[in-house]
Amino acid sequence: MADVSLNRNIFRGYDIRGVYPTTINEDVAELIGQGFGSYIREIGKTECIVGYDNRLSSVSLHNSLVRGILKTGVDVISLGLVTTPMYYYAAIHYKISPGVMITASHNPKDDNGFKIAFDESGNAKGDEIQDFYRYIVKGNFFTGEGKLTTRSIEKDYIELMRKSLSFGDRRLKVVLDPGNGTTSIIAKAVYESFPIDVVMINDLSDGTFPNHHPDPCVEANLEQLKAKVLEEGADLGLAFDGDGDRVGVVDEKGAYISTDQYMIIIIRSIIDKVRNKSFLYDVKCSKAVEDEIKRLGAKPICYRTGNSYTKAKVRELDLPFGGELSGHVYFRDRFLGFDSGLYAGLRLVEILSNSILSASQLLEGIPTYFATEELKFAFDDDKKFSIVNDVLDYASDKGYKINNIDGVRVDFPDGWALVRASNTGPNVTARFEAKTKMRLDEIQNEFISIIKNK
Image 1 (tube, helix red, strand yellow):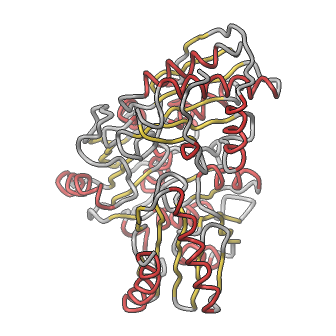
Image 2 (tube, rainbow, N blue to C red):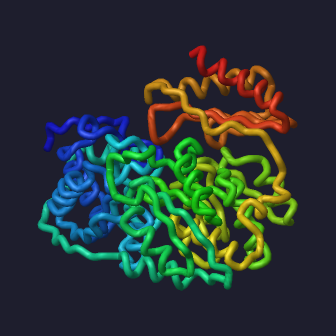
Image 3 (cartoon, one colour):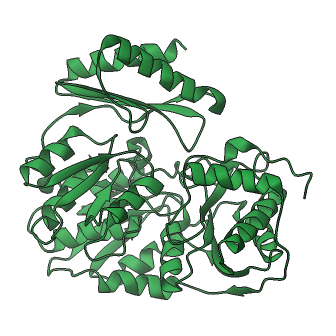
C-alpha cells in the first residue's frame, strides 16, 4: 500500500471527495481505511460504523475501505446501502461515534468520497481533514484483526420519524422525487407510514442518475417534479439529493420554494414553541431570512456555508433550528439535529396537515428580493482560492463593507455579493441579491467581470 498515489486535493473542506477511479479507487479506499482505523485507535476507539450510497463505485469502495479498517484491529458495523441520514442515526442509535459514509452527495455520477467522523464531534472538517491526510502519509498504522458485522437501521429510522411528528386531520397528496438517488430505497416506505397520498417519480435506485442531476436545490433539476405536481393536482412536491441529506420543495402551483423561504416557514411555525429564539442561516441565504427573524423578535445568526460547520454550530449554540441554502436543515426542537431530507419534507407536510393554507400561501409576507441562483465558475483547486483573494483585494480597494467568514460577502445598502471557493469541487461559486432587478444586474456584472477576467 506504500505505493498508492494519494492526491491531496481530494481532502477537501468537509470530506474526502474525488473522481472514480482516477483520484479515488479501491487502493486509496483501503489506505484511507487503514489510516482511519489507526487514527481512532490513537484516541481509544475500537469500533466504527460504515455505510454507502447507491453510486456504482460505492460497493467496491466499501469493501476496500472496510478491509483497511479491519487490518488495524478495529471492529466494523456495516450498514450496507443507506442514506447519509440513516448513517447519522445509526451512530446515535448504536452509540458508536466513529464512522465513514461513502458518498459524493450531489456530485456527478463518476465522483465518490468519504464523510468521516472520528468522535462525538461529528463530521471532520477543515484542519481536521488536513491533519488526517498528513497522518495517512506518515503510514504509521496499527495492525490487528477487526471483526465485521452487519446491521439494518431502516426500521428504527422510520420509527424515529414517526414518533417525532404529529399530523393533523388534513390529508395531503405529495409527489416525491428521489432523483434515482439513495432515498429511492426508503422514501416511499417512510411517507406511506403517515396519512399521506404518495406519488413517486424517478424512484428506481440507479447510481447513474439517468433522469436528472441529483441536486434538488438547483431549480433546473425539478422540472419533472413541477410537471407531476400539476398533473396530479398535488399539494406539494419534494425532491432529495443523491445521499438523502438535502431537500428541495415545489408548491401546489409548481413553483420552486427555495431553502431560505422554507426556513422562514419553519421558523414561523416553531417560534412560539421553543425556548431559545435564535436561528442560524448561512451566508448564501437571502436577507429575507434575517429580516423575518428580526420581525419575529428572534436573533439571526449568519454563519459560514458547509453542513459540517453549520450543523456543529447549531449544536454548539443549542439552537432549535438552522440551515443553509443548499438544502441542509437541522431540527433540534423535537428531532436529533442531523440533516435529513426526508424528515425536512415531512415537517412541511405536517405544517400543512394542521392548516387550511396551501404551500404557496405559507410564503405570504416574506420580504421580496431579487437573487441569482448559486453560480459556478470552473477553476482548478490550486487556483480557486487566489480568485477569491483577488475579489477580496478589489472589494477592499473600493472600501466596500466586507464579511469574510466564508469567502467574500460584500454588503450594500440595497443588496449583496458573495464569492467563495467551493469546498466540494473545483469551482468558484457566486450569488447575488438586491432589492430591484436593475440593481441585481449591476452588482452581478461588477463581480462576475472580476472572476472572468482572471
